[in-house]
Image (tube, rainbow, N blue to C red; front, side):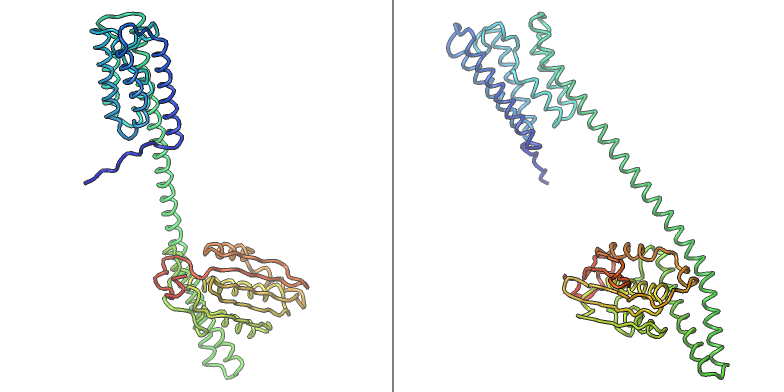
Length: 412
C-alpha cells in the first residue's frame, strides 16, 4: 500500500520563508569564508564552505525529506568536529567568529523539524547535535553556551510551541464535538416534542373533526331540504379533506419530514392550485387563474410550496379584502416556477372576527417556506389599494424525495 507523499512546502509563505533563510545563511557563510584565515590551506576552508552552503540549501527540502536532512546535517556536524579536533582549518575556518562545530543553519533546521517529525526523533537529533556543538568533554565559556543555545534551545522552544498548537487544536476539536453533541440532543428534544404534539393533535382535533363529518353526513341523509343537504355534503367533504391534511401534518410532526408524494400533481388532486381557485369562487370571491407552461417541469416539493402560497394568499383575501377580486398566476419555465397572487382593494370593511382569527404569522411562514426550497419571496401593497404575494421558485430541490421526481425535473 502506497503512502501519501509529504508536500514540498506546507504553504507559499513557508516556501518563501525557507528560501529566504537558506540564502541568508548561505550569504553569511560566504562572508565568514571571505574574512576567515585561510593560511591552513586553500582547499580546507573551501571544502567547509561547500558543506555549509549545501546544509543551508537543504533547508528548502526539510518538509519533504525531514529525516534525510537531519541525518545529513548531523553527519556534517561530526565531520566538522573531526576536522576541528584532528585537522584545524580543514572544514572549520580558523576565525574568532567560528565558535561552532555544527552547521550555522542548525537552529533553523531543528526548530522546523519539530513541525514534521515526532518528539522523540527531534530530541535525539537535538541531543546529538548539542553534544557535538557544546563539547562537554572540554567545556569552554566561548563554545559550550553557544553550542547549547544553537541546538537544544531552538528544539525545546519549537517542541513547546508545537505541543501548545496541538493542545489548542485538540481543545477546538473537543469544543466542536461538544457543540455537535449538544445540537443532536436539541434535535432529539425537538423530535420528542413533535411526537408529543402530534399525539395531542391526533387525540383532540381528529376526534372533533370526525364528529363534525359524521353529523354533517347524518344531516344530509335525514334532511328533506336540498339546500341543507348540499351544505351538509360540503361540510362533510371539507371535513374529510381537513382530516387528510391533518394526518399529513401529524406525520410531519412525528417524523420531522414532509410526507413524500411520488406522483406529479394533476388538476384533480387536492394539491393543485386550480382546486383552491374553485373553492375561492364557490364562496363568492371572483378569482381568475392564469397558467403558462407545463406543471410537470417542477418537482413535487416545489409544487407543494406553490400550493401552500396560493392557499394562504387566497385565505388572506377572504379575510382582509371582502368584495375584492383576485388573480392567481402560475408561470412554469425551465428554471422553475413564478407564482403571483394579487387582489384588488376591498369593497367593504373586513369582518373583525374573521380577520382576527389567524395567528398573524402567515406571510412570515410563507417566506420561510419559500426560502427553504431556495426561492425568493415578495409581498406588499399593490397599486390601487390591493395586495400582492409572489415567489420565484426553482424547478427542483435536492431533497429526500428527489428519487421520486420527474426525470426531466431531476436533470435540471
